[in-house]
Length: 120
Image (cartoon, rainbow, N blue to C red; front, side, top):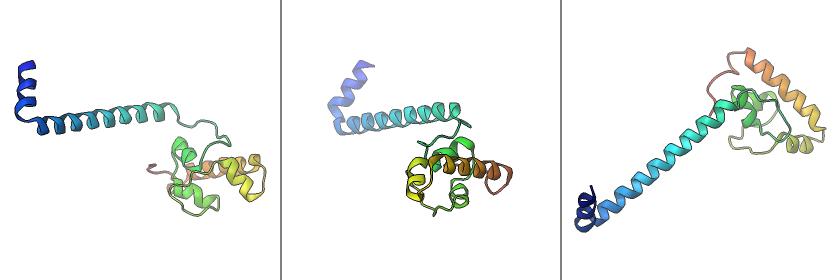
């Protein structure tokens, strides 16, 4: 094995470096995928809190994010990272009121076929 690596390094240095970089990228993406799966497999149907974003709630409760945004009267911004607390402050209502609206919307969407579906 050592002779093979030494030979590749001496005769095909650029190809060997490119292979090592590709291997490193592949390993990093595999680790990211495993971490992503491990996180979301344990974060299903967690209690909704004011620090969460609408997208986080949608993924946790397995509802369609766009449907949840529409049911709350938000425009369909795909990467809206505002928390529920911030959205409540922008609307001028207490966070508890918006939290209850989110909970009701999630419950309604989980009962309808349009609300269920693939989450990103």
